Figure 1: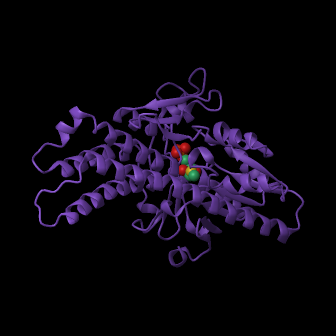
Figure 2: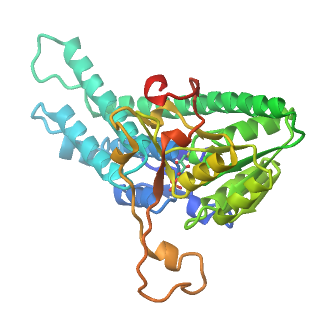
Figure 3: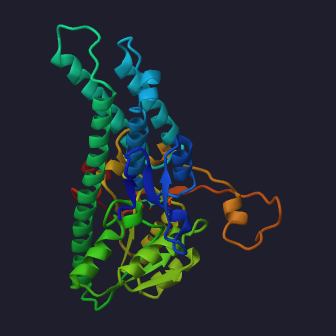
Length: 375
Ligand code: MRU
């Protein structure tokens, strides 16, 4: 089953609840806008490309609900503004979903794409009957355009991840060949695998592909990724399921495995790449990149072109999400592990300076510095 799909009626979305993994593999159905908003905010669905796909699917489901007779009357009156009403409602839902998390650019990008698709359909209908005033495509036709766009976003992501995986695997082979190594070591942070995307994933894609191909001997060190443990709960789970040699480490152990000579490249995903190559990803990613530089280990960002934001000139322009301090103080512990009321700072992402990045691997190829020119 896909990680994100529509329910049978097409008026709700079904996702695997990532917040319960790896203990429980539970699929949940969401039909209300507020629960869809919460699903993103509470990381039941997470990972930059996945939240974009989810938003597009959620908007499709919500707009299909508008096709029910009562709802059609509420948003699409006989006044001739019904297409505008439909698009206004789509925008309102889109704004709600987009407000759930600020850092990953894919979320707003996907919302904008489906709104644009509905508008294009509205104008197409008007063009078909140029002699008439107040022409409406109608809610059914607009909802169909939204659905088609959501499907396109999903299928494009599948293809992008495959392509990223192939380029990433070639790079792994090149490094392994150059150094004549017997067993290659890759370190990854957070989770950028199938759960966070559509099929192969981005940072984990080359590893899964190389394992399927069986031509490269490698092992993976997965940072546990405090405070929400995406590395421990999701990356270790996905790699173990794929039969890959994975060793879980605490975030503060990255330095020792690098010093031991066990890591030959770092692969991480991205939530937003600025025009100059500065990259926001899960909190702690920049520390990995700084360590990698110290030990002379190449550091790669892997992500689809939908994660590149040309409207963000540098990393300082990327909004960084701050989350509930209780995620640090007490989440996952039986009892709070810090003095009651202690101040906490809990940014969910940090920005890795472009100077620390060896290359950015997208579906279009391996992009090396200077990133401001080559991206
Ligand atoms: O807070 P999360 O779990 O959504 O953060 C996810 C990451 O930082 C991933 O590395 C990133 O979104 C890339 S997913 C292909």
